[in-house]
Length: 74
Picture 1 (cartoon, rainbow, N blue to C red):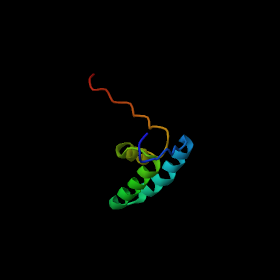
Picture 2: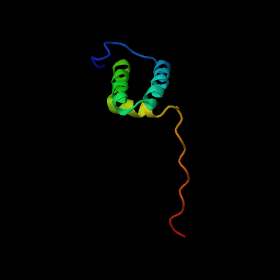
Picture 3: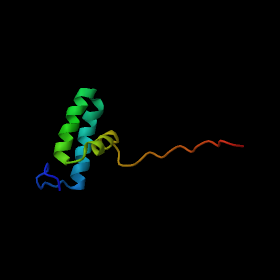
Picture 4: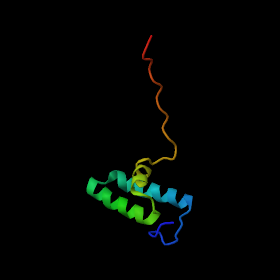
């Protein structure tokens, strides 16, 4: 456990709700504001910065399916 969180644990459901709430602000914000939102999110959740960025970018839990690729050869 890291020293930042001082023994606090957020449940998975709480983290998901928090991600949904903050992701809306994150998407609407300009770049300087995104940095502040990200720092706030990291302090609350204890996520690593590089893990928090994709978590805030994807708002739904389901991943988008990739489109089928076209054939390269005959």
